[in-house]
Structures are given as structure tokens and as C-alpha cells.
Amino acid sequence: MNLSEEEQQEVLKVMKSQMLTLLHGEFVRKFEEEFARYIGVKHAIAVNTGTAALHMSIAALNIGPGDEVIVPPFTFIASASSILHNNAIPIFADIDDKSYTLDPNSVTNKITEKTKAIIPVHLAGISADMSELMDIASDNGIHVIEDAAQSIGTRCYNKKVGSIGHLGCFSFYPSKNITTGEGGMVTTNDDELAEQCRLLRHHGEPEWYVYNRLGYNYRMTEIQAAIGRVQLRKIESFISIRNKNAKYLSEATSNLKGITPPFVPDYCEPAFNYWIGRLDPDVLGITKTQFLDRVPRSKVLYPKPLYKTKLFQKKNAYSKGCPWSCPFYDKEINYNDVYLPIVEKATQEIFALDIHPKISKESLDENIKIMKKISENKQ
Image (tube, rainbow, N blue to C red; front, side, top):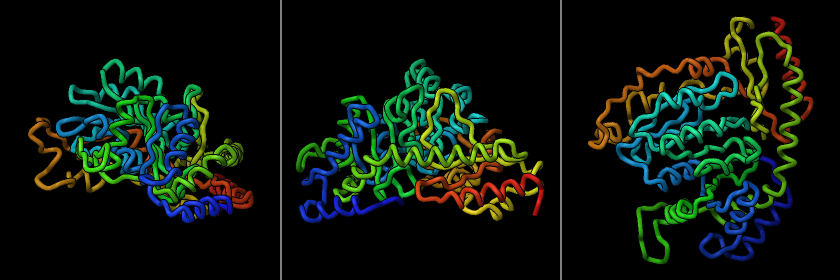
């Protein structure tokens, strides 16, 4: 985390006000207004987590039993579990071999009469090809929910991610480009979707003791918003440092055999969250596990496709097999039969390195030195 005295002073203002909830304070409202301006949308709805943002966005579209939502399996579980929380069916599509984001061709092949939405995940600061995905969605009458949790500030075709789809979802977890500790945001240009999100955030309640729909308690606190407002003022400097660190690593590793730096598509202006590298175990003569053991501050991005986790293999969501056994869903889904070749390969070869604003040049140089040794097959 990258917190300073400035964030502390804003938190003290909230505490002195004695107004800790958005129902009575002003910090959440101001954070929403400022975040909407930053992303370039009409509406921003603050919530308590990025997971809540995804769940709420799907619910706002009235997606539910019998519906399918297309999502990549090379992502954090919330991208898919939020679909299950709405009693809909996750349908996994493959990823692009270079950007590791949703492959539009695979998405097209997965669309059925039951498809209601696509959730592209902008990975570690690299955006999915939103132009192609929006065209596919338009042609098929379906919605697009951007999972931009890892890519706050990234641009795609000169637009900030989260402003292109029908809804955008962000996370402010400590590892993200800005943080509120826990927290999230939904963005949209659609007035009706924004209204539904606000209802869903607070028990479906437009006014006290009036309940218009099933809702939740997904409210962000005033303290979170106070931190977020300061963080948002610093975001461009944070992104500049992250991108500088990413460029430094990429230039130093661009000619190493067996190690490939991240690919940035022409349409994307990244706001790197992690530096995503790819290793070739056959060329390096070591496994990914051995590589990670040797390189400090390296980490597994995603160890297996989501469809290979117990949740999906056993279809262990709710009792009695729901939502897959729902009477509104007349198809049989067997995730044991799913095989997406690019995802399968990516889980064996992709790794991540920290590039956050507080990391030192010495730490980056240490990683580069060790990766060079591994590439040269030196112990």
C-alpha cells in the first residue's frame, strides 16, 4: 500500500465529523463524482468490494436463472462467482495468446440464445479488445460488463476502461493501482442501470422502509472514500511509476531466451498493475515452480483455469445442483469437458512481478540479474 500523511488527515476529518456512513456523510458522494470524472462516465456507484461491484452489475441487468454469461477462466474467482451469485451460468471462453485477455473469436463461438452478457477482464493493466467485443455484443443484443479491477487508468482505443462497456467494475484492494483497503466502484453512462445499482447497494430501498427490489448492503464507508479521494489525486503519479518500472523490466528482458515480457496491443495504453512475464520451461530447463522459487517477489498469477477448480468440477455452488439444475436451464454443462488451449498453456507459463510505486530499483535489478542467469542456464 502507498498511504501517506495526507490520507491520514482525511480519515481524521471523517472521524471528527462523526458521520461514518454514506447515508449521512459526504465523502462517498464526492469520491463517486471525482471517480466518474476520471473515468469519463456519467455515473459512479461506490461499493465495499470489487466482488460486490461485479455481483451488483450482473443483478442490475436482471440476469438470473437460465441465463449464460461469458467470462475468461484466466482470472480471479470473483469474475465467475459473481455470475453464480446471480443464479446464472458461467460459460468460459479462451484468451488471446499475447494479451491474455478474452479472445473475441472464442467469445463468438460461445454465444447461444441464452447468452445475456460478456465479462472481459482487463488483465494487470492490459485491456481486452473492447472494440471487437462491443461489436459482438451489439450484433447479438447482449451487454458487456468490464472487469477493470486490475486496470484502473488503462486506456483502450483512447477511452478509459470502465467507460466503454455498459457497466464497468473496479476494485480498490491494496494490490490495485489505488486502494481504499477494501472497496470497489461501478461505472456506467446508463441512467437506469445507475439507478438500479444504487437500489441494489442499499437493500433495494429508494427511501426509508420502501423496498422496490431485492438488494444488499454493499455500501462503501466514509473512511474508505476519504482514503480513495486522496489516492485518486495521486493516481497518475502512481501509474507513471508502475509503467516506468514495467518498461525497465521489459527492456532488460526483451532479448532473454525463454522469457517473454508483456505484450501491449496497439489499441491499449496500459496502466500496469503487475509485470506479466511468460517463461518457456523447455528452453529454460526448469519448471515454473522452480523459476518462482528463484526469482524474488515473483508470483503465480493463476495456477489453473477456473473450470478446473473444485467449485466447477463438482458444480458445488448451492444445494440441489443450482444454478445448473435450474428448471429454466435445459442444458447440461460439464466443466470436466472444457478445454481451452491458450488458457491451459498460460497457467503453466505466466508469472507476475511486483512493480508498485514503493519497489526499489535494486529490487528490480535483482530480479533482472536472476532472470538473466536462469535464461543463460546458470545456477
